[in-house]
Structures are given as C-alpha cells and as structure tokens.
Image 1 (cartoon, rainbow, N blue to C red):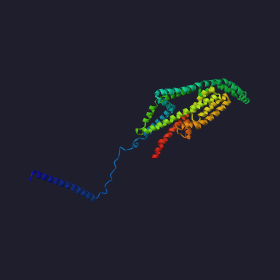
Image 2 (cartoon, rainbow, N blue to C red):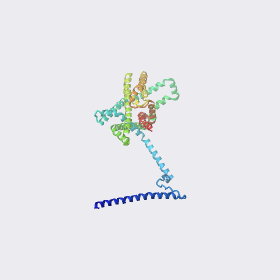
Image 3 (cartoon, one colour):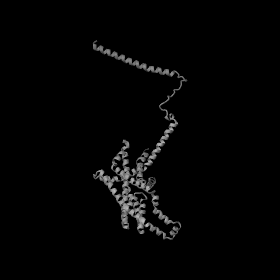
Length: 405
C-alpha cells in the first residue's frame, strides 16, 4: 500500500470519529433536556412559596408629593402675578399695537402700487418714495383746502353769534323764558367766557394733550407705513420661516392668501373712496357749493373709509353746509347722497369687493360692529379683512382637518 492510500485511509478514519463524536453530543443534549423536564414535572412545587414583591420605582415618584403646599402656593402666586403684569403691559401699549396693525394694513393696501412700479423696473425704494409722496400730496391738498374754510367758518360764527342771540330774543316765547330764567344772557356768557372749550377738551392742557396725541399717532402711522412698505418682502419671508420646513409651503400659501385678501380690501376701499369723493366733488360744483367742494369732498373721502355709517356721516356734514348756504341745496344734497348710497351698496361695493374679500354680507355687518365696539374707528376699518382671514383659515385648515378625521 502506497503513501497516498495510507493518507486517504487516515482522513476517512478521522472523519468517522468526528461524525461519531457529534452524534454523541446531540444525543446527550436531547436526552438530558428530556430527563430534566421530567424531573421538574414530577417534583411538586411547594404551596407556601411567597409571591414575588414588585420593585419600588424611586425615579418615577411624583414630585407633587415631595413639594410642600407652601411652595406650591408660592409658585402659583408668582405665575398669577406674571400673567397680570403681562396683561397690564399689553393694555398700556395697546394704542401702539393698534397703530402697528393699522400701519401694516395700510402698507399691504399700498403694496400693489409699489409692485406696479417695481414691475416696470423702478427700484423699490424709488417706488415707495413715489407712492408715499403721492399719498402725502393728496392728504396735504385736502388739509390745505379744509383748514381755511374751517377757520373762516369759526370766525363767521363768532361774529354772527351776538346777532343770532338778539334774533332769538325777538321771539315772544323765548323772550318770556329769558326774562324769567335769563337763558340768553347765560348762553352768551357761557360762549364768551371759554367754558365751552373747557368742557369739550378739558381746558388748554386737555386740548394740548389731544392735539399732541393726534399728531403723534399720525407721525407714527406714517413712519411705520413707510417702513413696512419698504421692507414688506423681508417681513413676509420672516413670517414664512416661522413655520416648520415640512409645512412651510402650505403656510406660505395661506399667508399669501391672507395678505392678498387684506391688500385687495384696502385697495378696493381706496377705489370706492376715490369714486365717492370724485362724484361728491362734481355734484357740489353743480349744486352751488363750489367754494366748499374740495374741502367737503376730502371730508367725504375720510368718512367713506368707515364701513356702514361713513356715507351717512358724510351726508350729514355736507347737508349742514348746504342748509347754511341755501335750504334748497341742503335738500338736494340729502337726495343725492341717498341715491348714491344705493349705487354704492348694490353696484359699486359688490363689484369691487367680490374678487378680493369673500365675506358674506351679514358677517361684514357683524364684524364691523364688533370691531367698532372694541377698537373704535380703527377696529371697524380692520374688522372686515380680519374676518376674511379667519374665514380663509376656517376653509383651508379647519374644514379639511374635520373631513379627514
């Protein structure tokens, strides 16, 4: 037998030994487990073995049990005081916050004019300056026309007041009352002594405070409007980045729709006011109020910004001037404004607003009343676009969420 055959025979014997050893190990493991299972099955478990005690979890102990009632009440009182202080701070700066919101709304309303110039390759700063100067020119023209007439009417009233009181004394009934109660003498003394201004404005100091507040509010609104108008794109981007990245596209869409609605409402109001003041200017020139037409059309424009009651207030002011000139002119003025209110309510306002602010008519009335009750004239101005924004969020966020659940 050669060395190759011996080597092959040795490998086969080693292989047989390994297979035999593996078989013995498997058999021992199988039969050993079977013996241990039978032993455990046949050995009875003692009945008096105690039940296992659950471990005490120290880390999950409630902190409320470790806090004393005194400390709990102290920190609760601190939280209440902080909340009261925050509410008081918001109340103190509420006027500033209202001016900021009003300026933002005006900036959104003037933004289409700036964008119109920017699309024609006018730099944004220049476009903002052109729009601002145009707006200031219109306001300055109205004030220039209004102040001289207002001052002249005050002077005429002061000059004609004694004559008017004497004419009242010619009435027998009024003369009898004056002889008994000295009514006309007291009225003349009240008007001449300056008590009227004292009661209306709280004296010189009160009138000065009112004038200072009005001037400050106008300057603050103008400065904030110009700032918001110049930096409106960056403000929008900042608002967009407040949303998470996964929802930023949806938030951008909703914010753009809200901004578009507010801008459309303010722009539409500018158009409606321009038509109202222009028509009033033409009517006054034909009706015999030509010397007051520019000032009264400016007053009409200011009143028409107020929803619901603005046109009626303008009618009262213009009609009073018309009655002072000629009773026939006053009656014609009332008839004109009543006719124009129908045109504005059923033709002009719906056609201008139907593509910008989708708010039902009843909600327009309710929002204007609620806004005027809460924040006065400014609240009435911003109530309708705010209601439009809330309706948009309800349609785009609340309703899809309710439909999905």
